[in-house]
Length: 73
Image (tube, rainbow, N blue to C red):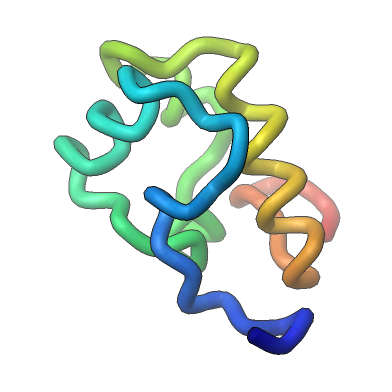
């Protein structure tokens, strides 16, 4: 995988809890690249997503030069 490969499945994100994975999958988010169109506030409204889940997601996105909507990469 290259550093800018943004097709990583969310299920591969290390440190992401099972409830957060289920919340994202239930909302239709299955790939990291999809999260560039959604804000942290929107993610936090999903049942099962909490502030601790944002850390691993932000880290995984940053490693690929990406960020959540409204945030700097």
